Image 1 (cartoon, rainbow, N blue to C red):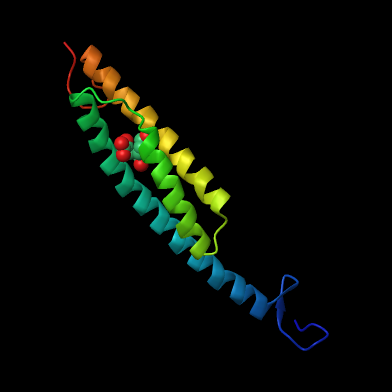
Image 2 (cartoon, rainbow, N blue to C red):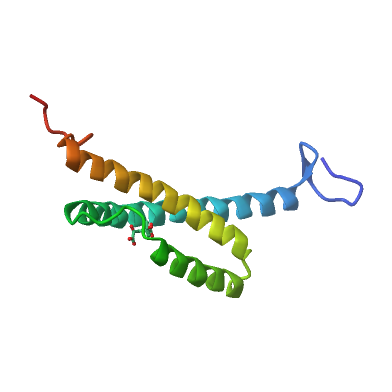
Amino acid sequence: MENSEGSRTTGGLDESVRGELAALRDSIDNIDAAVVHMLAERFKCTQRVGRLKADHQLPPADPAREARQIIRLRELAESAKLDPAFAEKLLNFIIAEVIRHHETIAGERLTGDVAGDGAAAG
Ligand SMILES: O=C(O)C(=O)C[C@]1(C(=O)O)C=C[C@@H](O)C=C1
C-alpha cells in the first residue's frame, strides 16, 4: 500500500520509519546487553570486595568512597551530556544493592551459613 506521499506503508507505518525504528531498537538492544555484561562484571568485583571486607571486619559501606564516586560520576555525566542527577541516582541504586550483598556476606561469616555456596549442610 502507498500513502498520500507515495511512500510504502505497512500497518499504517511508513516503511522508512519502520526501518529506522527497527535499526534504533537493534542498537538499544546491543547497549542493554553491554550494560548487563558490565554490571555483571562490576558485581563480580564487589562480591570480592564484600568477602575481603568481611574477612577483615571492615564495615559494608564506605560513605567517603561513595562521596568521591558521586563527584567523579557527576563530572563524567556532565561531559557526556547525561543528566548528572540521573547518574547519581543510578550509582546510589547500584551501591545500595552492593551494600546489601556485603551485609549478607558478613552475616554468613558470623553464622557460618553460606547461602548458595553449593555445600551440603549437615
Ligand atoms: O569500594 C568499596 O568499599 C565497596 O564496597 C564498593 C562500593 C561500590 O559499589 O562501588 C559499595 C559500597 C561502598 O559504600 C562503596 C563502594
